[in-house]
Amino acid sequence: MKRTAKRFTLATAATAGLALALAGCAGGGAGAPAGGGDTEAPEDITVGVAMPTETSERWIADGDAVKAGLEEAGYTVDLQYAADDIPTQQQQIDQMITKGADILIVASIDGTALANQLQAAADQGVPIIAYDRLINGTENVDFYVTFDNYNVGVQQATSLLTGLGILDESGAETGETGPFNIELFAGSLDDNNAHFFWQGAMDTLQPYLDNGTLVVPSGQTDIEQAATLRWLQETAQKRMEDLLTSTYDGGAKELHGVLSPYDGLSRGIITALQNAGYGPDQASGLPIVTGQDAEIASVKLIADGVQYSTIFKDTRKLAEQAVEAAKAYAAGEEPEANDTETYDNQVKVVPSYLLESDIVVAENIESLLVDSGYWTAEEIEKGQSD
Ligand code: BGC
Image 1 (cartoon, helix red, strand yellow):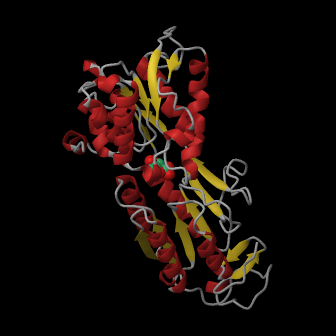
Image 2 (cartoon, rainbow, N blue to C red):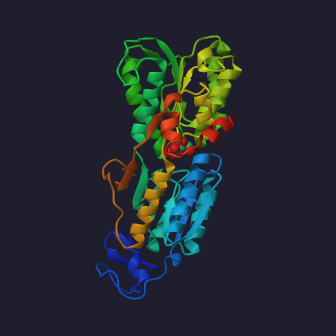
Image 3 (cartoon, rainbow, N blue to C red):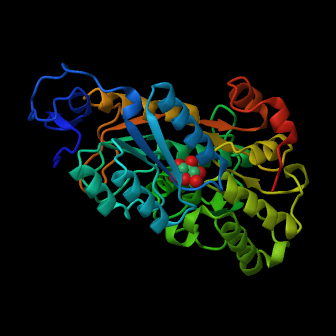
């Protein structure tokens, strides 16, 4: 790995030895002993945190939690949101580097668009932590904190099968053979996660598509057809409207379920369905709609029997892992990975720390989301459905 240290000295061949540089040993070469000298104060370590957008509440929660954790460790934090605009994110990262960031934590918009920025960071010995979304096509990503994204897709599809009654609560087949009409939505193709969610979901649904229990009347079963650029709610709503017109007689034909990979998309899909006369809730014929992120507006819809499920990914835990990784780099160490096989970014396999996620349905909102303090009962009660 190429690292010509700006402030850092290589503690090992693979690690930007922040601790050494901070200890005033910037002249030491690879393999120089750690420690010694006057240790620079933590507040002199600046961590640049690049987040994609504030339009989805999960990224606001992520940004807040990462910032709070880093500040608790004493570091200075430069947190930026890029309004889902690629040039803005590139510029923000350029600026972080110019302003002397020592460590970068990056949740990318387009996982392939940051190669120049990350090269500049690497040239200055800045360790780069990919946050939630893998950064592809560059050697300059040192660590990756995320969830088991394939399993998130499995969970989304499993909840669709449960909602349709094909599986019971324990995951066992009920013998129900449908056939059920479903439609499929995917996320933004430039987000590496979208492919993992899709793969996990399709591997889970495929046997039921093969045996005719599930049917996709539109025939749109490729990720390219199902994709939603930038994960935009209105784009998903529009596609659902188009599908209802092209395939469901504008709402007259039965649709039983929709695989949706993110709560924002789910709400767009539900709006389209309700406008076409389905529902308004599951009890009155609204199709089973899945989701992801446990956003408050969707949790409220789940509590009200409108959206069927979501996937809870505890962003507090993800933020904690990102902070742990930053601390490790600051100490001249490698962060601890629990997966060194799954995330190949086309240049290398990036050492990763994967967290687990949970399926949320109406029955376990309290135990998963309220008891853990993620949302309060009052927030769910008041949660706005947009
Ligand atoms: C994240 C999801 C999120 C989606 C849209 C993905 O990269 O992993 O949690 O729903 O982006 O923001």
